[in-house]
Length: 337
Image (tube, rainbow, N blue to C red; front, top):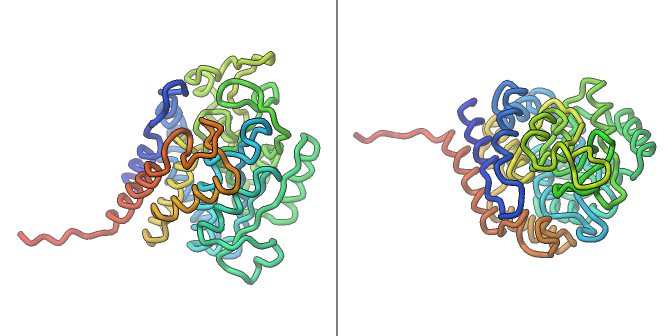
């Protein structure tokens, strides 16, 4: 399994970045994360989920990187990854996925869940309904964020809390974009949920691609060293973009969706159901659904069928290769010579 996890890690961190974006950062991030986790991070995350999440348990997921000027309904990185994770949590473990996000970003997430063959239902209706997920709103503001975190932990008693492509605060408490500028949006301060979950020994996982996302506080030194804006940002605060939220496992990926798919792949292997992974056709459906619901490519700020500057067809190819890695793991070669 370690060999499988190492190869999935490497695939998820393979850089395909555009000129003008942060190149050369994901591999050092990955190495720092692996050192912290004591092994392949996608596998470590999947192993913890597999051990701690049972049928009927609630898993909290969050995503939604949006900007009221350029990404008013969020971006195409995040919602497909969270939908794929929600799907295998529901189909594979019988868990109850509950996704929290800002109101503005909820449409593309719901669309991706439906594209992933999950019904979107109110939480009260999920008790007796399989293959479903709930999307709920996390309020903006620091004090509201703290209060909502306490309410969620008390009411739902989650077994895991997972973020993918969810911007977190820097050491000055200010969330930043990947370009080193302060985020222009009324963000949900959902980092408070991660702080509280860790205090109560609930599994916490972060997935991100630049170092400004929730979970990168776990390897903040690497972010400050390798990201051009990690130490000093482009705004007056000069506090850098490095997130300060510490989690049990941080998963660096070239695209945040890929990190989520890496966990999905490792869970499929642990469940011994490789066909439970989503495939290229579902990847296409999720990206199309998110764009039709208003999500933009975060690199272009446009309603294009792409994620982080890379065409949908290449993301479909990525999923196909990831499927092959897991499916071949279970095939036995029969020698005829």
